[in-house]
Image (cartoon, rainbow, N blue to C red; front, side, top):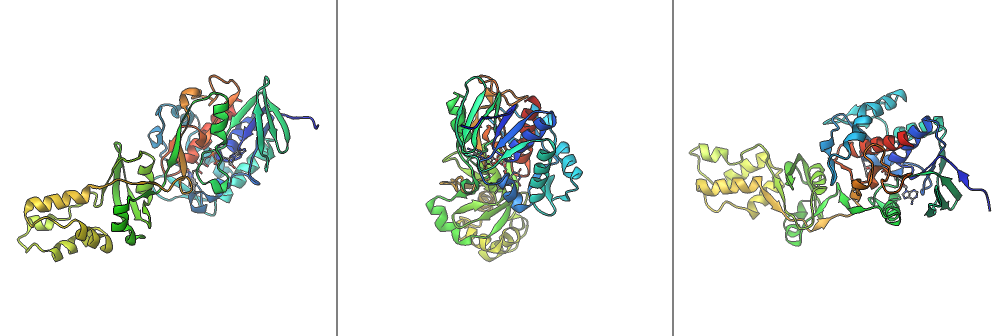
Length: 390
Ligand SMILES: Cc1cc2nc3c(=O)[nH]c(=O)nc-3n(C[C@H](O)[C@H](O)[C@H](O)COP(=O)(O)OP(=O)(O)OC[C@H]3O[C@@H](n4cnc5c(N)ncnc54)[C@H](O)[C@@H]3O)c2cc1C
């Protein structure tokens, strides 16, 4: 039997958080190994941001994250700000741009970010083992990890295996399973940043409009997002819906303002012009895409042409209540919300309070970013926090 590989720290998962953690620890002289299940590192980085990787957000703040403990992420985010990552990107001369609202994307491709992280790992002397299936983790003092590539030993073990979203690029439940093995609490994982499904009735009413998009404000649970909404063959998507999906719980209604900041019936109220369906359609079409305007009028015609009925019509446009039947699930979810209960972890180092030497970082933790580069910023920040503590 070959001798086990011995390191100061083993990092399970070579995605965004794991690689950042490895770089920080390696730079500090730690002997680090990254054990990656897949045949290559960072597959999710490569598909992120439509292939251009929205690698951070200039306006990153704790309010951009959901967690049962909204204070937990503050320390790590404050100690690894977007400026650190941008400095790394600039050091590697990677061209990037701000797309909108502080979202930074690569000009060329997400491959630039992965190559940068791989190069930094090389410089920091990190050992990488891809195609390595973890078979068993035990703790006979330090940690022993039995894998398809032999046995690895280290006093510290970092779990950076991500969430459940997009199983076809290698997402596994490993992190949650390991947490259970060590008695670490988990808050039920659920798909986040995910399209929502219409209930049967709404599907019949709207799904033939698939492809129609409008700027809306979507609200739920005290959160509101103003952005594009897209009607799909099965429900609703687009940035406003993806954002609100992370806050949505089963059976709750979401409220959609189809014409935020605009008054559709203003001209009726103020003028003496005849009130007719044709005139209303024409005004509604100025605010909504024509097909959606026509469908809305067909399904929600004003009850009468009185001021009161027009006011009710106006209200309905600003408060379309949709009760989704569910989400498109992990196959389509950009992130997994929930995860390792942050009460179990040190906010400074991500180390487990009850299992010294065991760390959880990145998406597997109950910290979920909004759309716009925040999930990577959490991966970098939590990875750096653990990497500096190893
Ligand atoms: C389509 C898509 C687009 C996205 N775009 C953006 C974006 O532009 N900006 C943004 O901020 N966020 C984006 N995200 C979210 C972002 O990719 C994740 O939040 C981030 O990658 C999480 O980093 P992580 O290191 O925790 O997990 P991951 O990056 O998922 O890395 C986990 C790694 O662990 C490996 N692994 C899993 N199980 C095991 C195991 N048992 N043993 C060993 N290794 C294992 C996986 O193969 C993977 O390499 C996107 C997500 C998706 C799905």
